Every structure is written in structure tokens, then in C-alpha cells.
Image 1 (cartoon, rainbow, N blue to C red):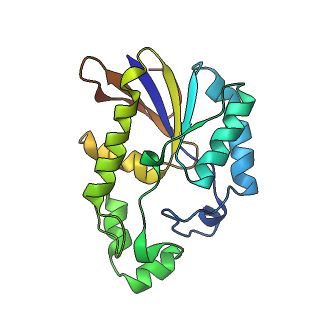
Image 2 (cartoon, rainbow, N blue to C red):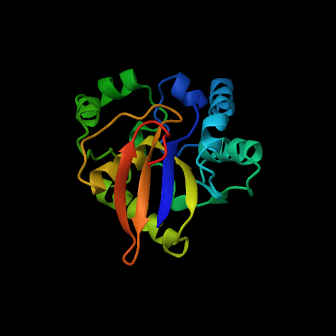
Image 3 (spheres, one colour):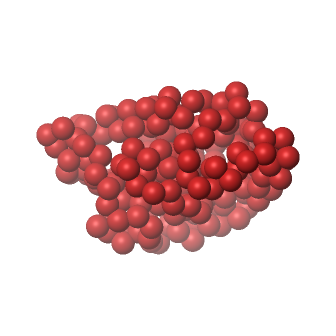
Length: 195
């Protein structure tokens, strides 16, 4: 059995401005770096063996800080876990999105699988994310820290048939891959307590 703690990256400079990044690549903010440093003692308890990160800068920087602090090998980079391409809303603030695309944010807040104008299709995105877990089939009996994005957490919840949950920076959930078919199984969400 492989246990994965899927966690959202530390705060980026665009998070502070309430801008939608998608696959744009804003860096971690000073707050994001401090959040990550502060989270490291809690992240040490599960004895992770590997750190895997999305290829986007905000996740990679979070993963590098954690790997260094926990004395783990450098993070492995997996683009399967990149945030959803946000299309025309990338770089816009929430208020700009509401003005330009009325009702879109309300649908998103409800947890509806919305289509982003000019962005990656929801079905394409969720297939990419869920397909990325196939990489872990040969990782039996490991504990893995996977640093990604809120959209990735949403895609996993949707795949598991769970209701939408908002994840703040450095919040996450446990997942389990069970042999022989390596099905993605939900574990407790929120908090880091080991399942």
C-alpha cells in the first residue's frame, strides 16, 4: 500500500493579489516561504520517503524547501500534477473575473466542474491528474508527499465522488493506492494526522 499526502503549495505572489494563476508561474511569496518553513515540523512526523512536485514554480519552491528541511532527496517533478490551464482568466483577479465572466466564480465556489474560457477542459484536466497516479504503481509501501495545487485536490475529490472542499495553502489530504489494481482510495481530508 502506498500512502500519499497531497498538499497545496505555499502562498504565491498572485494568491496575495487574489489572481488566478492556472499554469502561469508566479513565485512563492515571502508569506509562502514562511508558511512552508512553519509546516516542516508537522510534515516530518509521517516519515515521508519521497517528495513529488508539480512542475510549476510555486509548487517546486515549496517542495524544495520541504525536501531540504526534512533531509529528503530532491523533489521529483511531475507535470501531470500541474494546475489546470486557466485560459482567459489566467492573471485576472476574482473581481475582474466576476465582471468579465459573470456567474463563473459562483459555479466554482459551489464546486461545479466549470469550463474555463479558453482553458483546459475539465475532463482533460481530471484525466491528466488521475492518470498521474499510475506513476506510483511501483511505489508499494511508501509514504509520499505530493505538492501540487487546489485544482488538483478538486480533481481528486471529483474523481472520488466527494463534495467540494476549499483547501488553503499547505492544506491537504491523505490518499491511498491499494494493490493489486492501485485504486485511488480516499483517506481523511484536512490536517496531517496520519490515517
